[in-house]
Picture 1 (cartoon, helix red, strand yellow):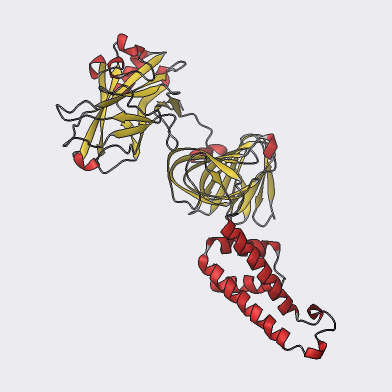
Picture 2: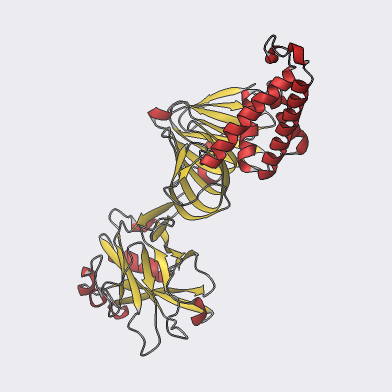
Length: 447
């Protein structure tokens, strides 16, 4: 906030003529910025000095007459009120009472953030801004409205019934409990009437696009000079202060109602095992390590399974196995080569397919139980990111398995340089911040 605006807000506050919005603006700035609090306190002290001077200027023989407040200027009375308000504010700040949460970060997938708010899934969110740099995140407002945010994007949380998308794409799902939910953009806003709709804000083009997936919304320009009602699969764009009806098939990105990719998760069917240590496992991580010859008591490998029921393989053009690398907190990266290669095996040995979550080293598949489908490399300096394979061998393997459960084994081909090297970890379905393994099947375009 610039100094002129801050001075204006403080002056209007001390004079008792600030609007509710101005008081809220000042309060938010006081909570966030220590310099603003210093300026406010200095101004309040000045007002107090004026009050003292006014008291001293009252003749002694009049001090027992009418109450002082009847003869003091409004500015002095405002100073007293300001000091009382300041005391309440400071007590609130010191006491730890802040804004009430209005939403929850329900989940995130491959998410990277630059945010003033917490970004751990499950965190309670107060009014403020979320900037999603990469990945996908779901924010559930306490009204029940759910916003799926796609990077790169920035969402401002304003109240349980209001959000503001500054840039990027979002899909909003509004249950009956949140009918009337408002999603603003820089040049307009949509009011929900019980629906599911999507919004894309193009900052470069200065446009906002709205599409109804199901239900009904009303779309308004920022000045509320124009309004359009949209129903199922109708879309509009706001540009230059006007609303224009558009064909949904002309929209890019998330606004297209498409199913070009089928994503399949493990549904908890993933585990890792440690050689010689059956109890050394983590439920939230899939651990992988290859030790030095003679020091392999703590070798680790991971196995996962996906169900492929109902897949029309004639329509699948490619397949990708996606893994989210997360820090394990075990071992030293400096004791690894600069680049580390990982192998993905498709399990073909029927006997080895009987593994279960929690199986020990001897009970989970080994490389000789399958066929190599592909490899990927991870620099030792990197402990976060998305990795995996997308190969013809993977697609052929999946096609050969048909319906049912298929299993994959992940091993590290690269051995450590010294004992107690870094253990690599990939998120499982129960990881608190990243999504578990995903099998992505791309469908052929039949148009």
